[in-house]
Amino acid sequence: MTGMPVVSTDMIAVYELGGVSISEFIKNNNGDWKLFRDLEYSILQKLENSQNIILDCGGGIIFDLDESGNEILSSRKVTLLKKIARIVRLEGDLNYLAQKVINDPTRPTLSSKNAYMDILAQRSSLYKEAADYSINIDSKDVEEISRRVLTLMPQMR
Image (tube, rainbow, N blue to C red; front, side, top):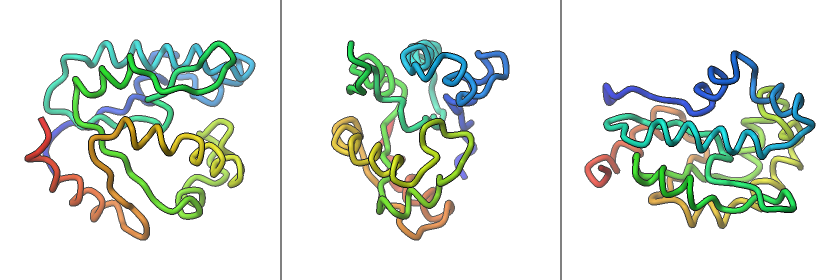
C-alpha cells in the first residue's frame, strides 16, 4: 500500500540464528529469554539509521528482563524504536487477540489461550506507555487496519 519495504525483526532474528526458529532457540536455551531480548536489541541497533521502512516487531520487542527474569519496559529498545519510526500499538479484545494466536507453534509460551491472555494483561500498560498511537483491530481485516495506520502517516516521520 505504501511502496515502503516491510522489515520484520523476528525474521531478522531467525536469519541471525542461522535459520533456527525463535521457539526452538528459546527451547534450546532452557526457556531463557534474556539472550533473545539482547538479540532484539542488536537488531534494532543495526536498523537505527533506517528510513522509510515499516518495521514489524514481535510483541516482546519493547521488553527486557530484570534480575529475577521478569519483563520490564526496555528503555534502550524503546529509544531505538522511536528513533527509527513511530510506534503503533494494535489493541483489541483479549479473547479476539487470543483466538488469532491460539495453538500457533511459532509463538513460544503462548500456546494456551489463558497463558496468552495473562501475558497481554501484564504487558498492556507498558504497551500503552511505549506507543505513539493505538489502533483497535477488533473485527477488522488487514486492509482496514492498514488503512487506519496510513491515516497516521502524515503525522509520522
